Each structure stands twice: as structure tokens, then as C-alpha cells.
Amino acid sequence: MSQEFTGTLLVIVAGLFPVINPPGAGFIILSLVPDATPAQRADLARRITVNSFLLLLGALSIGAYVLSFFGVSIPVLRVAGGIVIGSAGWNLLHSSADEKKAHAVPPDATTNLAEQAFYPLTLPITVGPGSIAVAIALATGSPGHGLTALNLAAVGVALLVLCASIYLCVRYAAAVERLLGAVGSRVAMRLFAFILFCIGVQIFWLGLAELLGSLPGK
Image 1 (cartoon, rainbow, N blue to C red):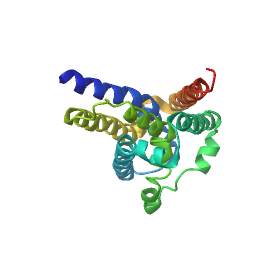
Image 2 (image 1 turned 180 degrees about the horizontal axis):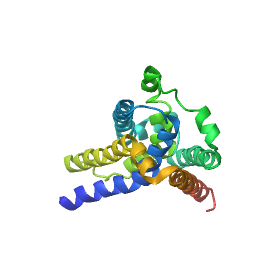
Image 3 (image 1 turned 90 degrees about the vertical axis):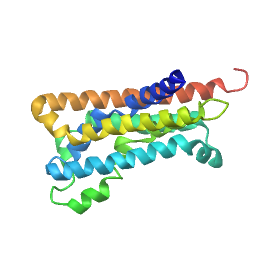
Image 4 (image 1 turned 180 degrees about the vertical axis):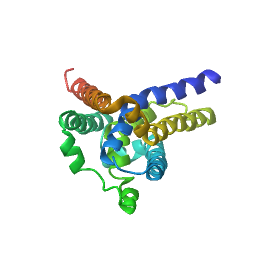
């Protein structure tokens, strides 16, 4: 019983954490709201965490049924998600400080910050197409005998772990930036952007490999 719980928990956390990349998301959100007050950052972190939990829960629970309804396969979703998340990483990798400031949210726009907490700060920056694709793929790999109460409990704990990491990284990104300094923060941003790009390429390749493997004669 404990093995089933631990296995489900580790699979979900290990599968989703690298794609969500909470530290990277925290730095990216920080670059978009550089002048937000501590109170605004705390409110944003709470909103983004709640939105992320609902998105991931929806992807894990009904995502596969939605795809089936529209006739979209998991490999196609992976290819599309990989392209989107890889493009986002590429753009961040090559964006300048001036471009980031141009897209930054005004510091006095409290209402505007609340409106943008879902789009774009949660979707697609924190939980993007790649995360949703991975979540749906994990859900479709659930035990054939059906989900047990233990599986559901493991899914709940895994989501809590992921969302807690999202909250901490978004809430305290400014403190980490001060600790790293200007140069260190830029290096960290480029590193996380490159990791995001690599994750996108990996997701794209997984989907493409499955599609090519399903061709007649393969």
C-alpha cells in the first residue's frame, strides 16, 4: 500500500516539477512585475498557486477526456506543447532587459496584477502547455484496474508539494534576486530560460517519436 502511494507521488512530482520549473517561473514572473510591493507579491503568489492547482487538477482528472472529445492524441499534444514551451524558452533566452521592461506590469496597477494572475502569469508562464501535456500523459498511465483512494491521496499530496514550491518561488523570488545580485540574477534567468527551451525540445521529441513510430510499416 505504501509503495503504491509513494510510487504515484514520486511519478507525478518527478514528472511535473522539471516542466513547471517553479524557480524559473518565479524569476520570470519577477521580471514581469519588478516594481510590485511585498504585499502585491504575496497576493500574486497566492492567486498563481490556486490557479496552478486547479489547472493541474483539471489536467490530471479530465484532461484525457477533453482530448478524446476533440480527437487530439497525447503525441500530438506533446508536439504542440513542446513547440510552445520551447518557443517561450527561446524568446526568454534572447530577450533583453529593455524588452522585459516593455512587457512589465505597472507597479501601481493592483487591479491589473489581479487580472493578469491567471493569464499570463499562471497560464502559460507557470503552468503551460508542456505541463498540461505531461499531466494528461501521467493520468493516462494510471493503473488499469482504476484509481484507488490511495492513488487519489497521492495525487492530492503531489499537487500540494508542487503548488507549495510554486508559492515559495514566486513569493520569495525578489529576496533571492537581492541575494544573487544583478549579475547573478541575469545568469539565473538565462539558465532557467535554457532549461525551459530544453524541456520544450524534449517534450516535442517524445511526441514526434511516438507519431513516427505509429506510421505504417514501422
